[in-house]
Amino acid sequence: MLDLLFTQCSNPDYPTLVDVGVLGGVIVYLAEHAASIEVPEANETIDLQGKVLLTGLVESHIHLDKALLLDRISDDVTTLRGAIAKSGELKRSFTAEDIMKRSMRVIGEAVIRGVTHMRCHVEVDPVIGLIGIETTIALKKRLKNVIDLQIVVFPQEGLFMDDVTQGLMEQAVTMGADVVGGITYVDRCLEDHVDFVFRLAENHGLPLDLHVDFSDRPEQLAILEVVKAAEKYNMRNRVSVGHLTSLGSVPRVRAEAIANAIANAGIHVMCLPTTDLFLNGRGGSLVAGRGLTPVQLLLEQGVNVVYGSNNIQNAFTPFGTADPLDVGLLIAQTAHMGSKKDAQVLVEMATKRAAIALGLERYGLRIGADADLVVCRANDVRSLLYRRSERERVYKRGKLVAETAVSSRWYADES
Ligand SMILES: [Zn+2]
Image (tube, rainbow, N blue to C red; front, side, top):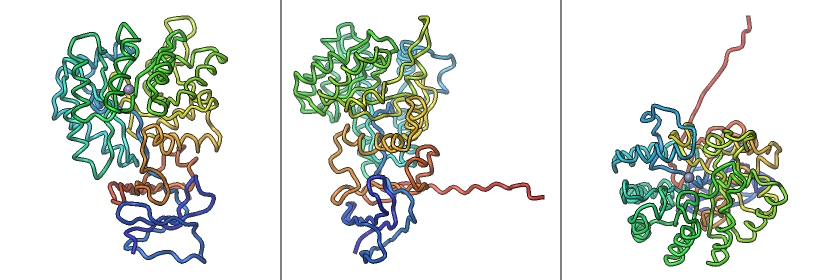
């Protein structure tokens, strides 16, 4: 007897409707739906009648510790430097309770929208110390039956701007951070920064996730150094880079060669367009680059490209809903990805392609995978993406963790 059975589900990976059965939090039954096939018995059977059953959405890149700060910012921030400075100032008043409260609000919003996995970057520096890391580790334990959190320890203010952050990075890794973070545009010496984070990752057997080349200037190409290090340290498929927007301003032939090198090094790219489009592309020179990751060019060269919310309502990004599909739609609109096939790729970038970037081994719509599943109020992924249709039911390892019911109607003038 199954715990749960979904019948008549559509899913982009299957040409026909399928039935999906869950037992003990794991997918144990998966078969084409047909009147002639007898389905197994289950304690609860839900007929989806052709609605999309998606694997859980994967938030690849988010900052929970500095989310939801708009009510503390009175003046407009318009540059990356300004956003870093403003957040640094606000950070002085962060407490564990404050970080926990704001993080819970964002995670709640995300889970309601179908997010079952989230990679969050958490800052360490002389001001915040290990408060963010301690709080997020507690949060990860508290929510372990609702969402899988991956914690990236992240030196936002640089590794070599003071004499304590390097030690804090080491401590955070020992305490339980899952991923070593880096940022290529704060420290004075790029090589030292890259070397430090790769060594730390190597010593502890952890993957890496770096903020790289966040500008619209073609000469900012720290990615070349990261590619070199990924090869030197033998970290194929275990390195991700967020932003990579400078590459969008590089002439096409050179950009293709760099994208090819990224693909060969097995580096995953995370497009973060809500922040990038807000802070980049503002000029200062006569022609401003757009400041968007060249998503299509990277895909064409075989790079695993995914996307993330990055910031939710703060100095870096005043917008944000924690719905990955909002970001997917923004990329559809700004990276010229409007076809049916593009829509499928964009949904994959928030599901199975993101799962590859995060190294999630128990993920997928297949027998033996965790039953992290989302019932969507749409019959195909293109309309799901364009309308960001309600995620009616969200399951984490077979357990219902969120539900949404919306009823709207309109009244035509029939007089
Ligand atoms: Zn970020």
